[in-house]
Image (cartoon, rainbow, N blue to C red; front, side):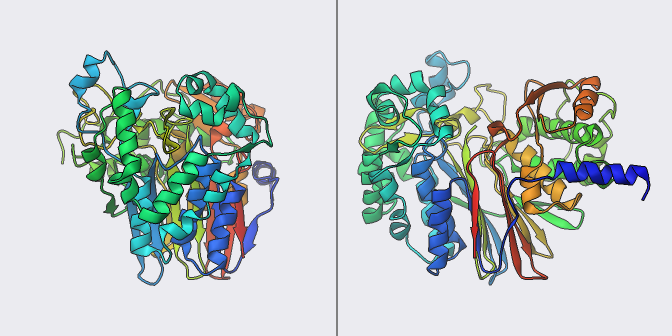
Length: 545
């Protein structure tokens, strides 16, 4: 072994050092963004439920214990692999804008862009219908049974943790000015202390109503009527008809080949296509010849991200309202052409989107693999912290602010229009080998999602990292303003070299929350072993048997 090889191995070893051990099992495995949620899903698996049942049980618990990240007032996407059928389905349970939410109506209110919070940031919540649809098609248990896992944490409380306290502090003034949501999360007007029990009795009552009447209680019943009445009182646009016409969509995942693996994710209106565009560009390069923490690799991946995102921002929208040129965006020939635009010595200030006219932060994530080989990647969100910061007082439902995914630029494909789904950052992902899941992965983190997912994939496929090593490895995040956030666990020489290439590097602490909360289950079919990695940056944990 020469000196260069030894240095590379040393760097690789440091890059993939971990605080947590790799978790392995032979029967089933679940990861989730909160230990109580992982435990709820594990209990379902232990009692004979399948991966879909367990995923939804965990998600329902997280709607209670991670109220700043997700909730029954949010949207949902799932990738579901059913082993016996050999199928991979993509469930899109994102909601549409109200019929009254016209561009002219927003302009009449004086908006130049969709506001950050308030009732005018909301689209129809899609998660409740999504849970029901997934269970009807692929589950073995009813929504009523799984809701029972969440009710005790809403009714009796759960211990407040530091991350939730930070989110409440960040939104304190908005929450206090927003009525019921402030009364719930800042009882007595005070920020709750770590360890105090957070109770949500109105939410518990809504769970009970959903147990008894199913999704109809919201989309055609008293929960929805309460939302519409509250919307009208706030000058919003929701009607009972908007809720009643909500539908979910079963879609075919979009895929790309990456070094003999098939990378699968959600089609538009999700941003998942940006993950595949990054993978297509990187597949043209020999990444394994670079050190995993080198400036050469980070620079290449960041520039590929920029190229993917400029096309994402130009074209991804609701494809039922405006065609999205998916095939062209995923063209391997164009991927090679795009990589050739990257200057290896200089960071680009920006790139122009491709012109196809001439040719044809916050979220929760979880993964489950059950004993039969069924696999689920689920991602669900209110979008930003506490979403719209609007709670329907009678129901305890916090509404998301996914309307922020629209633009008010009348010339853009993603312009606000009635009955339209906004651009969505949410995208679950799976990596398959020979048609079977080899890796189920994903993360919260808005714009950071595809960036984290591609780093996970490269670490595992190109550098042979295990699931925990990939989740704990130092991470970077490229921002719309051109800045590049890097954890301080990258070598100083890497950070210095990136600055010399013109990157606006902003160094943050190691294991920073802004870098997401990734989770991975790898399926070792040769040995019959499931291997899980869970990100210590937030509260992700894995449980297996």
